[in-house]
Image 1: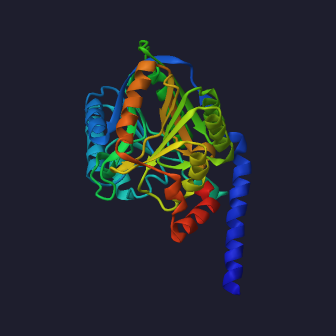
Image 2: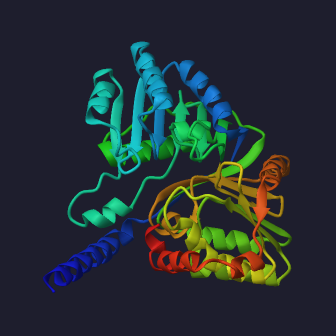
Image 3: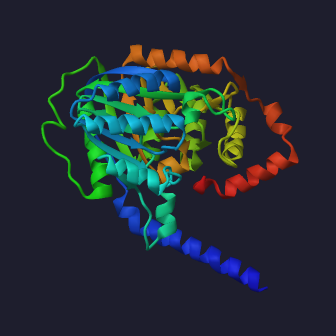
Length: 395
């Protein structure tokens, strides 16, 4: 009886922390919408290809390196990354490294001290504090931004760790999408990094060396940063605009009521909807949380595929071959209402076709989910789905 009472009290305190924290931070949720820009882009689909280019760009830095990752680990590639940053500091380059507190939780204090002693400016983003510790713990800075000398930027789904370069046998090939940007849009990536850095450290970064005059590129695009606000409505507007085709790629598909309603309406007006998710899961329950949504979509004629050759982690939406969104946000309630995310909306038919070609390659290594498969799920699978539905807001 005493144990049950303690469990009830703990659950009540957790719920109170969540509710009061959400109420307090409601006014701080925001969207930063940068202007339409023109930049040039390189598109990466594999970790080995990306990090070969990424590390070389860092080696060539002359003035500053600004890095924000959700996850940085302690394995061999992470150590290579740290050693390279230390080398650049020795060459006189400013290095600022910002890591989400939860995503970088496994970084030992000794390692962080070593980074700081070498001259790297290190900080944690979204470090939880009292009051409302649990609510703050649940909010993550999920952005991945790198800016080199104010002239070259990177944004996308990759973090730093061995799984991202296909060296984790539990996942095999890690499929993700990342962008390298040159041109005027880099100023906006820099502005967002500086905003997040100031939020974490109180240091304001400004000056011509950080924000040089940059040339226009060939591809029209827009960066949008969200902080638990407006992303759901942005996705709904995108879906409503679709006339022919919607393609969604995501590792986690937990869209919630309003986005789901928009997708069903799109199917009912004759729009083709294709959804690509991983076959295997990297977190408990997230895969099962998607299945109740899949059933309703399949009934309306959606095409749902599960990537089986490794792990699919890309975050992509394509609308009618006219526009695509590549960024850090998953298609789930956590990205919609809790995380800090950043998106790059690209309005260029030629580039969008390049992205669609990549998606077709991934679909060719995926299996199609059918209603028959859904109907023959085991009792164990159905039970996990029920639990996942209850906790979907925290997944």
